[in-house]
Image 1 (cartoon, rainbow, N blue to C red):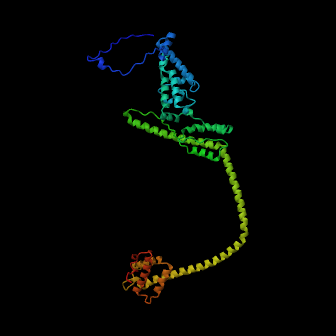
Image 2 (spheres, rainbow, N blue to C red):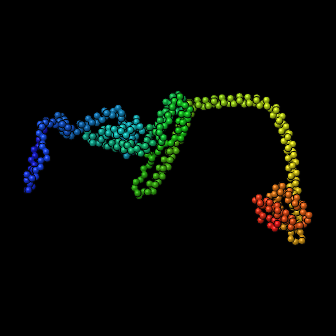
Length: 452
């Protein structure tokens, strides 16, 4: 141990300092205790290690770094350890979009299930193995391209948004659905459960219903397929976008690339929805439970049909007993209805004939007064048409009873040429239908007179 002696002079006392007035006793010091002090600590241990093994500082640091790497590798050998592909070690760091980030960090078996802690530990392990300084110290002339791949993979996988974008297009995590032949030969649930579990990672709704097994209820099976037919996916395809220029001089090119990327995303989204729909259709077609439920439904339907037929037969037998009396009653009712129809037809014909007669009375009344013409000669065709149009309008608004009453009153007029009386009677009829809101008095400029 090296001992360094240093003599430092104490500062000079002020000129007016006095021991009597300036010293204040605040307490008493305890008695001294003799203790043994030993050299300890990591720096002492490092010094002792260098002295023992006759190493320089740089040699000791290199050896310790190698031991730390081995220690880290031993700690993570069982969880995040997989052989490195020689081709992967030669990847170009600029092509980072084409690399498998999980394989770069040795997490291929975990992929989207890898936790942030596993990603950090895998990153530390890879950095200790492939750090450029370590390779340079070992005399390697390789570049740091794969080290940059490691850094990029860690950067993306520790960013939740960018990791989700990569997971959306990570084809290595997809599980191909089995074919019809494979499904028929194998276990449906064992073959298809991993497929749906893989697709479930894209669901906005969690947890996702389970595929179940042969003992699942019909309600659970229908809920499972309804969920997948209405699947709400968060899967996006931004990761595969074409790079957008960052410089401000190419704004048109930038907008063009953005529109192109948006169109490509929509197309890939539509294709993914169609792919998932076909996958669910195939699973539904191969699912023996669906066939069993349909058979049960058909059997239940047939049972209900047979019960219904038996019930109809019983009802028919009961109705057969009532049929004779009902036929007699029906025949009597038909005969009675026939008589009533004939009488009604006669009454209707009589009413129709009476209405025609009454209409002729109204038209004859205006004819007798020469269509209310003021001159002595024949009324003009225009006068005749105007009067007859008003008469037709009045007839269309009068019911049969009111029409008959008006015709009767016109027939009772002694002087058929009395224009005043005839107009008065027509005015009475017009006021009766006008009060009911059927016509307006102004519509009758010739027949109507407001003078009572």
